[in-house]
Length: 97
Image 1 (tube, helix red, strand yellow):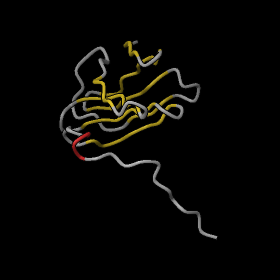
Image 2: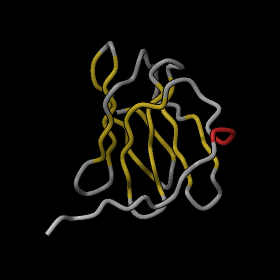
Image 3: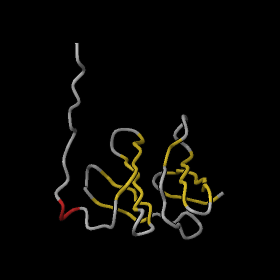
């Protein structure tokens, strides 16, 4: 039996006025974090409001490519050309460690 892949929702291009959205990771049911490799940004996307928020990770990011959240959901890791940034996730607020 084949498992089916079902899209949860689709964003209209006008909602995604960014460079090259690349990787994404989910935290819970409503929080999505996404990298914009060409624009050198990491965004939080709220599925309820359909709003992007540019995250401050403590330093500029350079071609971010790779993002994950720790198993306990408290830390986020973003890879870019300089290495890996670890950021604490506290109610959608980022602080560099």
